[in-house]
Image (tube, rainbow, N blue to C red; front, side, top):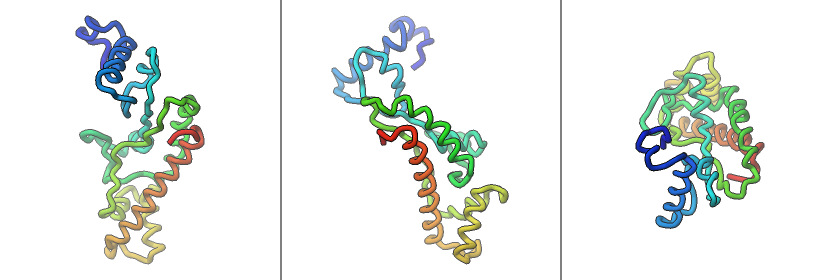
Length: 190
C-alpha cells in the first residue's frame, strides 16, 4: 500500500485512515480476527481498535543477503546452492543484533508471535555436496568437511542417509541459533 499514489490520495487521507477503514472491513465484514505475516502492523495498531498481529524478521535471509549469498527468486530470497549459512560465525551475532528489536514488543498481549524466516530451502538431497561447493575457506564448507571426516566418508561415497543426517545438523543449528536469539529478547512469544 503506497500512500503517495494519486488515486490513494483522492480517497484516503493517510495510511492511518486506510488502516482504520481496512481493519473495520476485515473485522466487521469478513470476520478476520488478526493480521497475518507481512502486514503493516504498526499502521494498523495506530487505529482505535487493537488487533492481534505477528512480526516477520527474515533472520537467515537478511544475514545471507548481507554476506552476498543470495539471488532474487520469485516469492522469497534464493540462497546460493540452497546452502543455509547457519555454521557461519556471523549468523549468531546477526540474529542477536536483529532480535534486540523484539524487546520493544515482548510484553505486548496483542503480539501473537514472530516469523523467523520464510520458505527456507530445507532440502537434504545433495546437501553435503552443496556445502562443499562453498568457499573452501568458509565455515559452511568446513562444517561439511568435518562431518565427512568424523564419519570417515570420502566425497564420492556420500549416500542419501549421510545427507539426511547432515541436514538434521543444519536444521538443529538454525533452530537453536534463532530460538536462542529470539528468546533472549522476547521470552513471552513464539
